[in-house]
Length: 265
Image 1 (tube, one colour):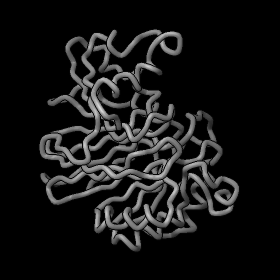
Image 2 (cartoon, one colour):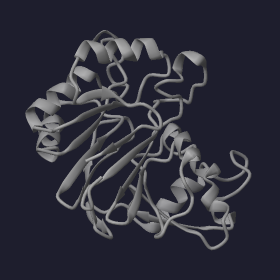
Image 3 (cartoon, rainbow, N blue to C red):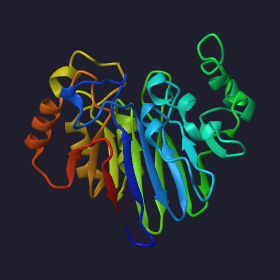
Image 4 (tube, helix red, strand yellow):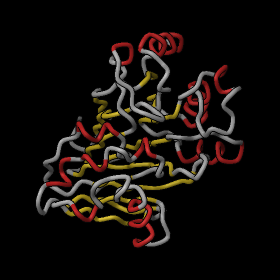
């Protein structure tokens, strides 16, 4: 990574629920979590079970962006070791009208009887704030767009040092939103796109809020994105199956995300 670039580490790319078996080890079984490092800052895209393998020591407080509140995207939060470190500050943003509403959304999950501790009971300090349409984390500009998913889901664009990436998870395209997403993703360096279903599977899953690799390729073509990382793998898809899908695409700048891989742009 050059001095002005961005570094993305895949901590978890599985969708819906974590999986753990030999047939799904190569692409990984942890749910959505991606670590972006740029301009001396660290931003996590979602807090699925992949967050458990994240580092905990940072020069500046890390930021977590929650795309939405479905459990596979936040179930790693309660076990993030940094929250138990005295005086360690972590900032978290989610879609809400006010800070109090943002806190109450998470309190519905992280509190007894569903979890032994409230997020306010940890030794560390978790600052929970509502997302804004556009804001900065140091030298990183973060911009948001509403996606199409049951209950809603935010799409994020991160820009720093002339490099940009767009994170599109839990997204089922319709004509209007897809046109907006093409513009939102225009000429980005890296596009992360929900490809949970094959075209055949999607025919029986309409309305579930997910997309296909074929639609990701279409978005890449129309937006002029330079690289496509396909994410949110089905919990039923094996390594062999994902490998076959990837081989079928046959392009060096398009592949299915693998847990622990690092991409520099």
